[in-house]
Amino acid sequence: MRPSPSARLLRGALTAGAALGLSATVLSSPARAADGWERCPANAVCGFSKPLYQGDMIVIRKPMASLGAWDNRIRSFIVTLSGYADAVCFYPEPGLAPEGSTHFYTVGSFDESAYPQLDRAVSSVDIGPEADDFCGNESRLPFLYDNPRPRPAALPATGAFGDLNHDGYADVLARNLIGQLWSSHAYTSPGRNALVGGGWDGMTKLVRHGDYDGDGFEDVYARDRAGVLWFYPGNGRGWFKPRLKVGAGWNTMRDLAAASDLTGDGKGDLLASDGDGVLWTYPGNGRGWFGARKKVGGGWKAMNEFVGAGDMNSDKKADLVARDTAGKLWLYPGNGRGWFGTRKLIGTGGWNGHAELAGLGDVTGDGRPDLVAHAPGRESHQGRVRLLVYPGTADGHLLAPRDLGDLRSTSFVF
Ligand SMILES: [Ca+2]
Ligand SMILES: [Ca+2]
Ligand SMILES: [Ca+2]
Ligand SMILES: [Ca+2]
Image (spheres, helix red, strand yellow):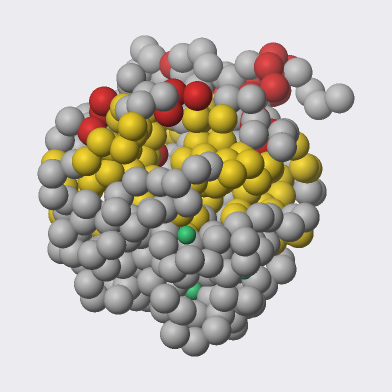
């Protein structure tokens, strides 16, 4: 058992008193009424600008990837979180980069602790259950331990997607709990796990499927909480050029799927299902935004996941994979005119066990698009869950999955 917070607090208070006694003659002003650890409110981590809980105070209530004006300023701290969430992990680097991070439960003054290397050297802070479980490892990164296979050269557009850094291998994008977006590439790629940036937790939908503005590089669409849809043009190196506003009002859509060219003009399109279960095709104009939408049909409320998975049945027309609320997986073959032919059952059940499904194109190197699933049902190690790839067959079916990598259960993959 670790010492109770009260025992730790008492020890901290006694040490503080002793230190103040020794240095009383050099204090330039009387101690303020509110100083010491008592200032810290409940259910927080408080950092102080001086040892022994003195000086200015920062109140931290959620993981912070950067500390702003408090960067490299924390000299002591107290934790008033309760229950399982009572841990804090301090990082000497911003972005919760794991190197040198150290784990604490209740209280400490770095200048006199076993961790003087953190004294005025803390640049990001993780709190809560994940800090307890994952402090100091690379747990916030997606990790591909089975390399995607190189794709055949010159795949058609319906197959050549999911490759952000333009190296011929499928890539994974993952957003973690603190809003960081990571890209994960093949072993041979420079910057295998690269931080794209922070602030992506402001987005309520993230979708991608190849190139939408004609420069040959994969792009991303993101919808923010206000319902604005943004276009993030890829730079072909794994991250993005300045974003462009597509339009407002997209909050009426339950789900979005970028799905390549559905209408037959060679330009990538977007599918959107609204709150009434109507599915719409938004024809891409080849510059990143869309022309007048076309109604595909109603009755799509029974579907809780849409994936623009590419041409799954090898007829050179982009298709749609959808999962229904019963956990069945369906292939909707595109007809090249913006809607779909008779659907085919490709997964008989249990697909609701996967938090997310994603189309990254051909992962297995046979030129056929595959399906990637983030699978909380399948624990990996250290509480991480597996990322699986279901290889696609020529006639639109899926083979048994194999492990592609793993990541935190709280991460979103696309
Ligand atoms: Ca790639
Ligand atoms: Ca592009
Ligand atoms: Ca097809
Ligand atoms: Ca494949």
